[in-house]
Length: 381
Image (cartoon, rainbow, N blue to C red; front, side):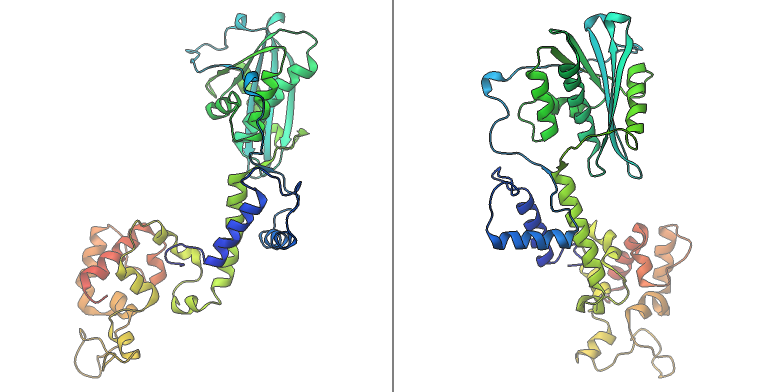
């Protein structure tokens, strides 16, 4: 399993149980509807094992439509480039609201919006900064900024029937926010705010970091919001939850792998992470598996299982003084019969020196290719 990169069955089932219990696919929320006691105990055990907060609010589709189909409304969404213009045409709208989201692994996630009033010579009328949870993605931050922009207009502006243009530099967030069928909670909330408003909203894409004043201002505020801003709670995404659970279980698997029987077989490796390059291969040669597990046609192993009379290398000298056990290490590093093959492969790959341990072959992609070629050409694996 470690060689193939497949998590043990009990841990794969644990991941599946986490996901199905945390996000019920039929639309019911497990925190609102009753579940049998044995499922509650399994859930508590899974959450404790994965170190997830029990009251985690998750972003998943609930039963029931967001709005009746009769209330669906087409929101104008423009992908037209600005053709080098420093700012969009101010006469096209009453208000321009620039939005942006940002994420820093060391600081957090944030979003911001800046409001420009075109009725007052395009002056800045207001700005808002919102700090999100560390578990929220940049996509959720971008959608959250669009939602807050629409909500700001609905809750703050005293006038009605204004033409409001929301400008952002994220294609995916804007496309999700104008769709009534989006799977993201925050993008559906943004759509509802715009549809149920007395104002007319339309969205326009702007290219990031091209000197547009409003976009640069929103970008700066979004970065500041990662550490300082009004807290804004957005449910974490399904993909983050799945990735978090799998990462925790993989970490637990690595910690327990060294005590398993498989680790005793793969004595040259310290953890499951040593096989990352092997997992990336589309096809794992049998010779590579023989090197890792040490179960091969070499005399040392064949003698141990009673299928060879001698454990010595047939390529070395015949007298007892020069004989050595035909182990994997002897063939790869010590046997003079394969010295020319080693030199040829080393020069062909333009590498300075031949590795000294088996583990080194699995730390570099080029060395792993050399190992595969060597085991195929020597004819002993």
